[in-house]
Image (cartoon, rainbow, N blue to C red; front, side):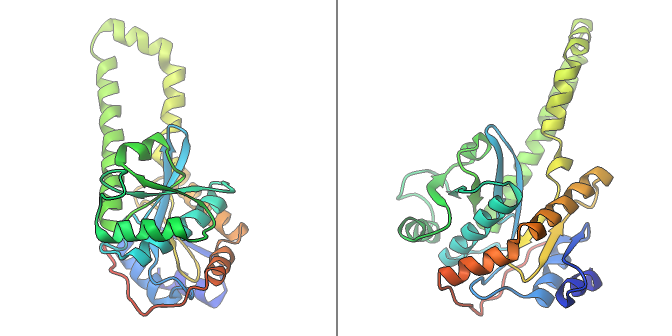
Length: 263
Protein backbone atom coordinates (compact mmCIF):
# COMPACT_ATOMS: atom_id res chain seq x y z
CA UNK A 1 0.00 0.00 0.00
CA UNK A 2 2.82 2.38 0.86
CA UNK A 3 4.51 1.86 -2.51
CA UNK A 4 1.24 2.27 -4.42
CA UNK A 5 0.36 5.51 -2.64
CA UNK A 6 3.92 6.77 -3.06
CA UNK A 7 3.56 6.13 -6.80
CA UNK A 8 0.53 8.47 -6.85
CA UNK A 9 2.46 11.09 -4.89
CA UNK A 10 5.40 10.87 -7.32
CA UNK A 11 3.16 11.07 -10.39
CA UNK A 12 3.95 7.54 -11.56
CA UNK A 13 0.28 6.58 -11.10
CA UNK A 14 -2.94 8.58 -11.26
CA UNK A 15 -4.86 6.59 -8.66
CA UNK A 16 -4.56 3.72 -6.22
CA UNK A 17 -7.17 1.02 -5.53
CA UNK A 18 -6.59 -1.24 -2.54
CA UNK A 19 -8.43 -3.99 -0.72
CA UNK A 20 -6.14 -3.70 2.30
CA UNK A 21 -6.88 -2.62 5.86
CA UNK A 22 -8.95 0.57 5.87
CA UNK A 23 -7.24 2.19 8.85
CA UNK A 24 -3.76 1.49 7.50
CA UNK A 25 -4.68 2.69 4.03
CA UNK A 26 -6.11 5.94 5.41
CA UNK A 27 -3.12 6.55 7.70
CA UNK A 28 -0.57 5.99 4.93
CA UNK A 29 -2.58 8.06 2.44
CA UNK A 30 -2.92 10.91 4.91
CA UNK A 31 0.80 10.82 5.69
CA UNK A 32 2.05 10.73 2.09
CA UNK A 33 -0.57 12.65 0.10
CA UNK A 34 -1.74 15.20 2.68
CA UNK A 35 -4.84 17.37 2.20
CA UNK A 36 -5.11 20.21 -0.32
CA UNK A 37 -5.33 23.79 1.00
CA UNK A 38 -8.75 24.37 2.52
CA UNK A 39 -9.46 20.75 3.49
CA UNK A 40 -8.59 19.77 7.07
CA UNK A 41 -9.56 16.09 7.04
CA UNK A 42 -10.12 13.42 4.39
CA UNK A 43 -13.47 11.62 4.50
CA UNK A 44 -14.60 8.23 3.24
CA UNK A 45 -17.36 8.55 0.64
CA UNK A 46 -19.26 5.89 -1.27
CA UNK A 47 -22.66 5.45 -2.90
CA UNK A 48 -25.53 2.98 -2.74
CA UNK A 49 -28.93 2.38 -4.35
CA UNK A 50 -32.03 4.25 -3.20
CA UNK A 51 -35.66 4.46 -4.29
CA UNK A 52 -34.81 7.34 -6.65
CA UNK A 53 -31.47 6.15 -8.00
CA UNK A 54 -28.15 6.42 -6.18
CA UNK A 55 -27.00 8.49 -3.21
CA UNK A 56 -23.49 9.30 -2.01
CA UNK A 57 -22.70 9.38 1.71
CA UNK A 58 -19.77 10.63 3.78
CA UNK A 59 -18.06 10.34 6.19
CA UNK A 60 -18.26 6.57 6.55
CA UNK A 61 -15.77 6.11 9.36
CA UNK A 62 -12.59 8.16 8.98
CA UNK A 63 -13.51 10.92 11.43
CA UNK A 64 -15.33 9.97 14.59
CA UNK A 65 -15.57 13.52 15.99
CA UNK A 66 -16.32 16.38 13.60
CA UNK A 67 -16.75 20.11 14.00
CA UNK A 68 -19.08 22.27 11.92
CA UNK A 69 -16.24 23.30 9.57
CA UNK A 70 -15.46 19.66 8.81
CA UNK A 71 -19.08 18.87 7.97
CA UNK A 72 -19.19 21.85 5.60
CA UNK A 73 -16.01 20.63 3.91
CA UNK A 74 -17.50 17.14 3.61
CA UNK A 75 -20.54 18.65 1.89
CA UNK A 76 -18.32 20.20 -0.77
CA UNK A 77 -16.34 16.97 -1.20
CA UNK A 78 -19.55 14.96 -1.50
CA UNK A 79 -21.03 17.31 -4.08
CA UNK A 80 -17.92 17.13 -6.27
CA UNK A 81 -17.96 13.33 -5.90
CA UNK A 82 -21.61 13.21 -6.98
CA UNK A 83 -20.83 15.26 -10.07
CA UNK A 84 -17.73 13.23 -10.96
CA UNK A 85 -18.87 9.67 -10.24
CA UNK A 86 -22.68 9.81 -10.31
CA UNK A 87 -22.92 12.36 -13.13
CA UNK A 88 -25.21 14.75 -11.22
CA UNK A 89 -24.66 18.35 -12.42
CA UNK A 90 -26.43 20.03 -9.47
CA UNK A 91 -26.58 17.58 -6.55
CA UNK A 92 -28.71 18.14 -3.47
CA UNK A 93 -27.00 17.78 -0.09
CA UNK A 94 -28.49 16.94 3.30
CA UNK A 95 -27.11 16.63 6.83
CA UNK A 96 -27.93 13.37 8.63
CA UNK A 97 -29.72 14.24 11.87
CA UNK A 98 -32.18 12.87 14.43
CA UNK A 99 -34.95 15.04 12.98
CA UNK A 100 -35.62 17.59 10.27
CA UNK A 101 -36.51 20.46 12.61
CA UNK A 102 -33.95 23.27 12.91
CA UNK A 103 -33.66 22.97 16.70
CA UNK A 104 -32.74 19.27 16.66
CA UNK A 105 -29.26 17.77 16.67
CA UNK A 106 -25.91 18.57 18.20
CA UNK A 107 -24.48 22.07 18.16
CA UNK A 108 -21.94 21.32 15.41
CA UNK A 109 -24.62 19.89 13.10
CA UNK A 110 -26.88 22.91 13.55
CA UNK A 111 -23.92 25.27 13.05
CA UNK A 112 -22.94 23.46 9.84
CA UNK A 113 -26.53 23.69 8.57
CA UNK A 114 -26.56 27.44 9.17
CA UNK A 115 -23.32 27.91 7.24
CA UNK A 116 -24.59 25.77 4.35
CA UNK A 117 -27.83 27.78 4.18
CA UNK A 118 -26.09 31.14 4.22
CA UNK A 119 -23.09 30.38 2.01
CA UNK A 120 -22.66 30.12 -1.74
CA UNK A 121 -21.86 26.49 -2.42
CA UNK A 122 -21.76 24.34 -5.59
CA UNK A 123 -24.90 22.41 -4.67
CA UNK A 124 -28.45 22.80 -3.40
CA UNK A 125 -28.63 22.43 0.37
CA UNK A 126 -31.72 20.43 1.34
CA UNK A 127 -31.39 20.72 5.14
CA UNK A 128 -31.57 17.90 7.67
CA UNK A 129 -32.47 14.35 6.67
CA UNK A 130 -33.40 11.38 8.87
CA UNK A 131 -32.33 7.81 8.31
CA UNK A 132 -35.54 6.83 6.52
CA UNK A 133 -35.04 9.63 3.99
CA UNK A 134 -31.58 8.37 3.05
CA UNK A 135 -32.82 5.16 1.40
CA UNK A 136 -35.81 7.04 -0.02
CA UNK A 137 -33.36 9.13 -2.04
CA UNK A 138 -34.43 12.47 -0.56
CA UNK A 139 -30.99 13.92 -1.39
CA UNK A 140 -28.08 13.05 -3.66
CA UNK A 141 -25.44 13.47 -0.94
CA UNK A 142 -25.77 12.66 2.77
CA UNK A 143 -23.23 14.30 5.10
CA UNK A 144 -22.45 12.91 8.55
CA UNK A 145 -19.66 12.50 11.06
CA UNK A 146 -17.79 9.21 10.70
CA UNK A 147 -19.35 7.66 13.80
CA UNK A 148 -22.96 8.02 12.65
CA UNK A 149 -22.14 7.40 8.99
CA UNK A 150 -20.34 4.13 9.65
CA UNK A 151 -23.19 2.83 11.81
CA UNK A 152 -25.78 3.84 9.21
CA UNK A 153 -23.85 2.13 6.42
CA UNK A 154 -23.37 -1.15 8.27
CA UNK A 155 -26.99 -1.17 9.41
CA UNK A 156 -28.09 -0.75 5.77
CA UNK A 157 -25.77 -3.56 4.64
CA UNK A 158 -27.04 -5.82 7.42
CA UNK A 159 -30.67 -5.07 6.55
CA UNK A 160 -30.06 -5.98 2.91
CA UNK A 161 -28.56 -9.31 3.95
CA UNK A 162 -31.46 -9.95 6.34
CA UNK A 163 -34.14 -9.34 3.72
CA UNK A 164 -32.30 -11.54 1.24
CA UNK A 165 -32.37 -14.30 3.85
CA UNK A 166 -36.10 -13.73 4.49
CA UNK A 167 -36.85 -13.87 0.77
CA UNK A 168 -34.88 -17.07 0.29
CA UNK A 169 -36.61 -18.74 3.22
CA UNK A 170 -40.03 -17.61 1.98
CA UNK A 171 -39.54 -19.32 -1.38
CA UNK A 172 -38.52 -22.54 0.40
CA UNK A 173 -41.57 -22.54 2.67
CA UNK A 174 -43.87 -24.65 0.46
CA UNK A 175 -44.14 -26.27 -2.93
CA UNK A 176 -46.45 -23.48 -4.14
CA UNK A 177 -43.80 -20.94 -3.13
CA UNK A 178 -41.20 -22.90 -5.10
CA UNK A 179 -43.45 -22.85 -8.15
CA UNK A 180 -43.93 -19.10 -7.66
CA UNK A 181 -40.18 -18.70 -7.63
CA UNK A 182 -39.96 -20.28 -11.08
CA UNK A 183 -42.25 -17.58 -12.47
CA UNK A 184 -40.47 -14.80 -10.56
CA UNK A 185 -36.89 -15.82 -11.35
CA UNK A 186 -36.28 -13.16 -13.99
CA UNK A 187 -37.66 -10.36 -11.83
CA UNK A 188 -35.71 -11.57 -8.81
CA UNK A 189 -32.53 -11.65 -10.89
CA UNK A 190 -33.12 -8.00 -11.84
CA UNK A 191 -33.66 -7.14 -8.18
CA UNK A 192 -30.52 -9.00 -7.15
CA UNK A 193 -28.51 -7.11 -9.75
CA UNK A 194 -29.99 -3.78 -8.61
CA UNK A 195 -28.87 -4.24 -5.00
CA UNK A 196 -25.69 -6.22 -5.69
CA UNK A 197 -23.06 -4.66 -3.36
CA UNK A 198 -20.34 -5.41 -5.91
CA UNK A 199 -21.87 -2.77 -8.20
CA UNK A 200 -21.27 -0.15 -5.52
CA UNK A 201 -17.85 -1.35 -4.41
CA UNK A 202 -15.24 1.37 -4.09
CA UNK A 203 -15.14 3.87 -1.22
CA UNK A 204 -13.15 7.02 -1.98
CA UNK A 205 -10.82 8.78 0.44
CA UNK A 206 -11.94 12.25 -0.58
CA UNK A 207 -9.96 15.30 0.47
CA UNK A 208 -6.42 14.13 -0.32
CA UNK A 209 -3.89 15.26 -2.93
CA UNK A 210 -4.50 12.13 -4.94
CA UNK A 211 -7.17 9.57 -5.79
CA UNK A 212 -7.37 6.68 -3.31
CA UNK A 213 -10.16 4.10 -3.53
CA UNK A 214 -10.80 1.41 -0.92
CA UNK A 215 -12.26 -1.86 -2.19
CA UNK A 216 -13.89 -4.49 0.01
CA UNK A 217 -11.20 -7.04 0.73
CA UNK A 218 -13.61 -9.94 0.22
CA UNK A 219 -15.03 -8.85 -3.14
CA UNK A 220 -14.52 -10.77 -6.38
CA UNK A 221 -13.11 -9.64 -9.72
CA UNK A 222 -16.41 -7.97 -10.71
CA UNK A 223 -16.50 -5.92 -7.52
CA UNK A 224 -12.84 -4.94 -7.74
CA UNK A 225 -13.33 -3.90 -11.36
CA UNK A 226 -16.10 -1.54 -10.25
CA UNK A 227 -13.75 -0.02 -7.66
CA UNK A 228 -11.23 0.56 -10.44
CA UNK A 229 -14.02 2.15 -12.46
CA UNK A 230 -14.73 4.59 -9.63
CA UNK A 231 -11.05 5.59 -9.57
CA UNK A 232 -11.01 6.00 -13.36
CA UNK A 233 -14.13 8.22 -13.25
CA UNK A 234 -12.52 10.47 -10.66
CA UNK A 235 -9.36 10.85 -12.71
CA UNK A 236 -11.19 11.40 -16.00
CA UNK A 237 -13.59 13.94 -14.48
CA UNK A 238 -10.77 15.88 -12.80
CA UNK A 239 -11.97 15.30 -9.25
CA UNK A 240 -8.85 16.78 -7.64
CA UNK A 241 -8.91 19.87 -9.86
CA UNK A 242 -12.56 20.45 -9.00
CA UNK A 243 -11.82 20.24 -5.27
CA UNK A 244 -9.01 22.77 -5.57
CA UNK A 245 -11.15 25.12 -7.64
CA UNK A 246 -13.96 25.02 -5.09
CA UNK A 247 -11.58 25.67 -2.20
CA UNK A 248 -10.10 28.64 -4.05
CA UNK A 249 -13.54 29.97 -4.94
CA UNK A 250 -14.65 29.69 -1.33
CA UNK A 251 -11.37 31.26 -0.19
CA UNK A 252 -10.73 28.43 2.25
CA UNK A 253 -7.42 28.20 4.05
CA UNK A 254 -5.64 25.19 5.47
CA UNK A 255 -5.96 24.16 9.07
CA UNK A 256 -3.44 22.24 11.14
CA UNK A 257 -6.03 19.91 12.66
CA UNK A 258 -5.25 16.24 12.25
CA UNK A 259 -7.93 13.63 11.41
CA UNK A 260 -9.14 11.11 13.93
CA UNK A 261 -8.60 7.99 11.86
CA UNK A 262 -10.68 4.95 12.70
CA UNK A 263 -10.26 1.40 11.47
